[in-house]
Length: 160
Image 1 (cartoon, helix red, strand yellow):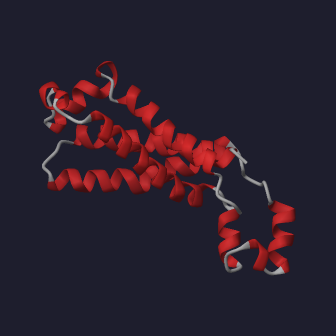
Image 2: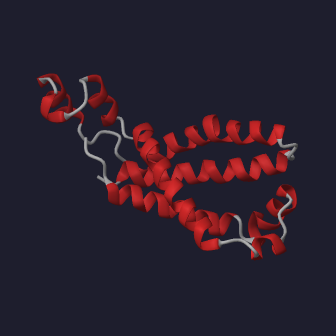
């Protein structure tokens, strides 16, 4: 299995697009600002180019692990010790039989949803507890990551 860098870049870009909609004041932006203690004045003084650039970079890093969680063929490669050129014949046979099995947007979105619900949301909510943030904050931020992981997983899994 090779990394599909175009799919990873597209998935990272999707996180930005979802964020632009999710955190829009007409969607969850105003509630998020109130629950996070952010004000428009604080946002105006921010270096938005750096924030968006680093956000994209971090989303690109996240896309690598999303790929491992959504594309089952990476698991098969890991079981035989890594690189396909040095793999045993059983790997080649497995890939001949199941090479593109479960490589759909729907399947990737399912695994992305499970990753968001069972990994991202609990992480956000745990931090929110210690930061004394509300359940609304946890649901908005955790919901963003769950939806984002769904879309990222779908893109990565379907793009062969």
